[in-house]
Image 1 (tube, rainbow, N blue to C red):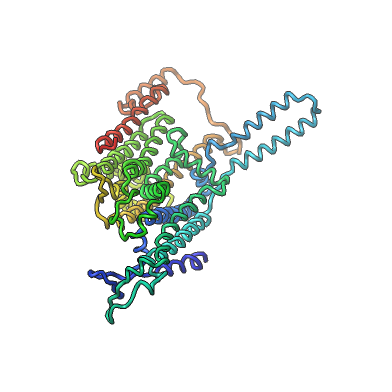
Image 2: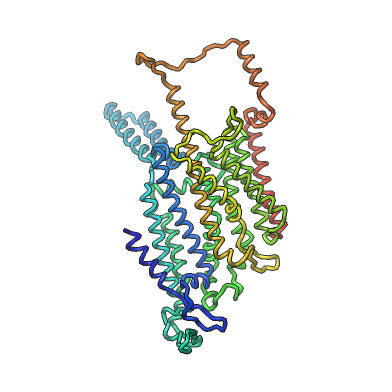
Length: 573
């Protein structure tokens, strides 16, 4: 109902706003029309980036709602809540434990109360504290309808702002004062514009000035809505986000790694959001610069030609998700005291970061053979890791000595796995392309396109949307594999705890109290003989925590050093 009553009429209004085409002689052609929204966005590139970034967030919301719907159809709510919506571990009963200790301390020092009354008061306080702790640790699971409803509300807000923006800015405000701007030049299809009248029209000037206000207001509204009203759900959400951004300072769960991977697919939206913040806090210079211009190439704008924006802010948006995920894998090495597979996973992000650094700080040399080879190898490595590690889709069969699709699958149709496998291969190359800057500053300060203007206008947003869709279907198999692991652990725990005999008598698991030393030495020698040097290098158990931290710090230093070297080569530092 909301879509039919609100979204469809606004989309129809945007469709009805059209612009006349312009001939080679500068006259308007009434037979050539196009949507005015594209004209308005072309005349205000900063506003275009604001709308583009928010629409990509809307697409992410739709994909999240669809993903949760798929999970609810295939898996139990208990497993979904455990893996995705569990209360952050730093918020579990932290305040209530201190209250309990204070209450217990008061019981020992307060001797004036009667023993029975004090015991009753203590029990009541304990029950209240337990209820507060249960409420604090209660898992809040959003529904598919709630996510979809919130996404539609955001989309409605964007469409309203886009309509007002288009209405006030297209073609110099011809919708506000069309009769004073355009007159018929002849009986043919050509129209001419009275530029002097248009330039002096107060409504036209008002429209040009007011147009950028709407996307700016939209930004402020979205920013306020992201934090207010501040409640438990938002508190949990931003706490989980802080786990990823603050890696490796916190423990890494499946949810943290899952969120980190999603961040790596949100490079373009992060860049648009960062550009928006930079645009707003730079004094809204684009507001005044664009009001009398038709294209951004006609002027030297301080925002687009900012050295800080193109050499610090936008590259940081590209590299930060890779750095966060890289630090998460290093933290997993420390927690599990093993190098594989975590260092193998970290190498995937390290390899991708080097390709990104080359593309960011030397985009004009994109046809370099070394860069193209690294680009292909990094993408192939990511594909192999997706199939054999993140999904474990194919396993080695010792009998047939070939790779076969794993037999334990939770989705009913085999075609789902094949379709996701093929789609992931096709769109994986788009993921790496998303890290290349659309435009960059040359050493002389000129703003240049990495590919072409059409690529920046049409292909780049398409690649960003395609990557969000790829990450969504990638998450289907990644989440399924984790569900299988959790179910296997729960089944093994249930089977090991209590064993019931045929007579209904519960029996404890058998414990071996003693083993012959000769047997132990034989087993130990067999294990040592079967171990390889690779396994020895993989094990962290013989190293102390200080040694492990030193080694992991070396890996982190290598990552940051490559970024510094690239910046120095570009002349940034």
